[in-house]
Length: 253
Image (cartoon, rainbow, N blue to C red; front, side, top):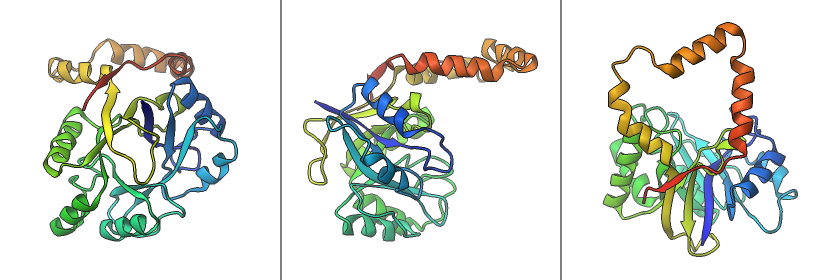
């Protein structure tokens, strides 16, 4: 089986500082067959990384395009950076390059094609959903409800599915993965299973018990660390520890 994280970012993205060396190291540490590098509105990271990338792992050229209303659509197996401003146009642009249209976090409020902030017409939203190739049914940065709605939407359309980490830090690579029977290609991308963090599901199941609490142990600890000036060092130590751990994943699809 081949496991991929199809939604990752590098320092070429405006909101990410992950180095190329750390991308390589973490992909190997997580035991992945490969990743798709999907930086925001650029493929500069892929160009910089491809000559460094180990031959025994797969690096897929991608781009997460930000459209006129803030909606994101990802193209995989691209030759050039995406330039279009609407969902319909960018999907046609991806397919014209021989690429795969990957619909990330479709119900995320501020950047999903079907999110509350989207300004595409219902007809364009429907067309785009029907012409995408893969729908992201698990995104590490989405709420449990947003992921659940994505899974139900994927079922309605009968599309291929994926889990992605949306990693903006090296340690997050592999927090969402998709399993395939064969090495991914523009013509072979039928998914077998999508995996996400088990901790995410546990948190969703217990969230109702905490929603009315003003503060909890984590809030108090964070306040004490912040007041003592130790919050940043504590986070750095935590991140170094997490980088060495294998994430506990469960099957979402």
